[in-house]
Image (cartoon, rainbow, N blue to C red; front, side, top):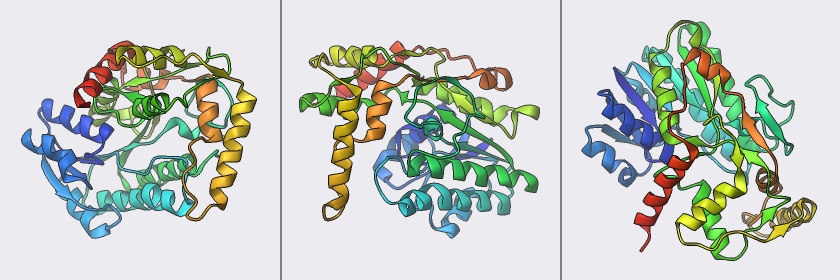
Length: 329
């Protein structure tokens, strides 16, 4: 099987491309940073650099492949809607169109459970519990991109979407590096009582789910899947576990949720008025993420993909810590 992995110079795309190579697949990768894909080229991947907003490039990328694993996109909370729409929706439209024109058989789309987030606690939320309104541009555009993907089913494209929660492991440059940086500046505090439980996903488990998606047949197709380790853990226990493993001071100071939320609102309001609208150091959405329970129902993935998380959260955290420690001077 020959596949294309977009966003392969990033964490999730890069880890899946490497995994696919290890499984013996013929892998073509795309990304904006050639240096981020060097390790894949050394393992036998074909690298084509370029911006997915160029429809002609995407046509070239999708030529002569059996399946596309679309991991590219914009992540974040701050910024204009146009930015997120271009990176998450228009780019996905280009990928879908290229799949159809180049007769690609299957498209796996990496989405996000940020779609569900509305600032409230959710335990065991399922794939159908999509809110009527989205909390930010990221969630709104990721959901709209999903709709573009599933609309292609009627033209014969086999499609699936995956919503993995808090993916971590070696190569994670998003979750824990930010928290470590905040703690080193003395700005990280436990929001609320610190007992909120959340889902994480080992990147190795996500690789298994995506690989199952490449091979699945019948009723598994045309579905959106929540992906996590299936065992919610106290967020602040996880944060302190990582800090302890890396020899950093643990987080012990608490701040009431209302105080943190008000500070975030003030921070956002000031940044909107400043020239260039600089990114705030604290968001209301981030405050809610740090204080609320949030876990996914993964029974659909278990049923249709035979998904069985084999790598524990703690093993994934150890993997991240070993990798992160090796990166530091």
